[in-house]
Amino acid sequence: MRSLSDNKTATALFAGATLVGTLSACSAPAPATGTDASTPDAAAPVTSGDYADGTYTEAGNYTSPNGAEQVDVTLTLASNVITDVAVVGFGESPNSKQFQGEFIGGIAADVVGKNIDELSVDKVAGSSLTSGGFNKAVAAIKADALAE
Amino acid sequence: MLSPSKQFEAIGAPWQIDTAQPLSAEADAAIAARIDDFDRTYSRFRHDSLVSTIARTPDTYRFPPDAPPLFELYRRLYTATQGAMSPLVGHALEELGYDRTYSLQPSAARTRVPQWHEALSWDGNELTTHTPALLDVGAAGKGYLVDLVAEVLREHGVDASTVDASGDILHRGDADLRVALEHPRDTSKAIGVVSIRDQALCASAPNRRAWAGLHHILDARTGLPTDRIIATWAIAATALEADGLATALFFAEPTALVAEFDFQWVRMFSTGRVEYSPDLNGELFV
View (spheres, rainbow over the protein chains, first blue to last red):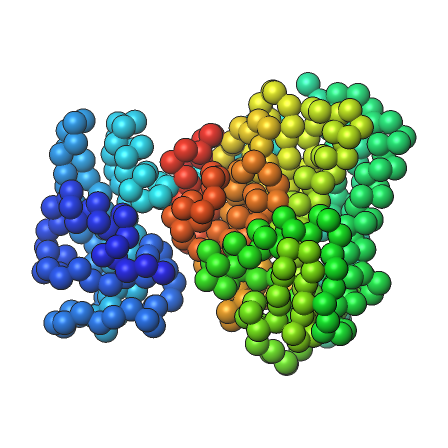
């Protein structure tokens, strides 16, 4: 895990975005565990000053050649350590989407599944189908569980 | 357009090989022999494999000529994931019940997964084990075997082919292959579609190999299944790399892997959130 201060995403944000409200109080670069980490990084250093534990979301605005753009930054703080960071870009133009995508290493989004049988595709890629022994073993365990 | 020409089961999964023309009997036999060779070396599910022999006695073992790319990829991904992705999880998988007999009954024992340097030395040809080490190359081995089968096809004059080992797909040819990305929580649905051409696409998800609240993708640092990511896809030049990277995406930030490897990726978090590489050749249904 990297700290926020040397993370490409965060560097770009702090350089290019005006973050207002609670986050602007963090004048020193605060450590983080990267995006969407589920567990705190024990090695992360503690910043000076006390912040209340909790989740903070702030909008950052910047002006691109396409006009005003926005990114939302959500931080989770525990004992003055950033334990989670999520950055969501809202750039509407193709360029903005591309650049924000490069910042955050991919665009975060909620997906809506489409029925595979309605898609025109040659193949489907998911986890490996299981065969033979594994399926039998799972079936046997289920049968045992029902019998108990 | 290729059409289905050969379907079979190997190394615990269904396979399909699509070619323009039906395969010759010679090519058929050569594919079966290649897969059997691989299995006899690397399978921890058979008693007579080299991997099972190694697990019984620490020593120095000579591997067949196909070994260096596999071990070198593992070594690179071990470093890139800071030790999370390791070929040394075999024993931990057995303790969790993913063993030769598929007992699927977790034992109470939890042995720490040794670090690479504690257990292994690989000199490019020979593997020396310092402890009784049960190797598991499941994170990249099937993808690698897909590459090796495509190589057999090429040796038999078949240049355009799609080898699909269920989740690990290698396309050879000059027409696009459109592939749906299966939703790990509803396998009748796709979260997107990508196109590959002369590339490999490998998917990884714990949804089908799950039992007793456990699954087969272990973080070697904890010896336990990972739960933050629920599905990954990687597109790379070879199925060896794509398969290994798909697993590594469960453990490492994509930015760390992109610095080391040339590949496209998609990953889905347990929260339902999806991230993908800016250069992804396809669309996600957002």
